[in-house]
Image 1 (cartoon, rainbow, N blue to C red):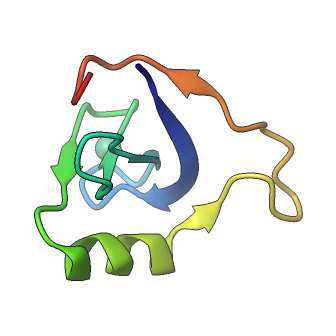
Image 2: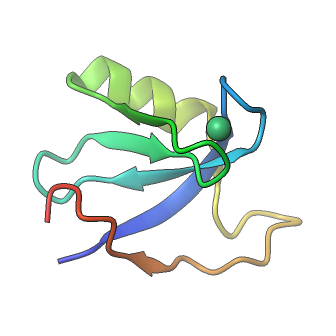
Length: 76
Ligand SMILES: [Zn+2]
């Protein structure tokens, strides 16, 4: 099983676009930064909802990048 990248947030560490994904295991959001390798995992619904609210969803205006399947080894 692979988790989907559903949006992006600015990485707090390097400022690059960090990829927001949903864990299929616990249905919490997390993000992984391809720029610096930072990984942030939500362990509560409040954290996950907060991340989902502040991210830029994939497929919005100006974002042509389609939702893509990724297999990052987490929760799979
Ligand atoms: Zn980063």
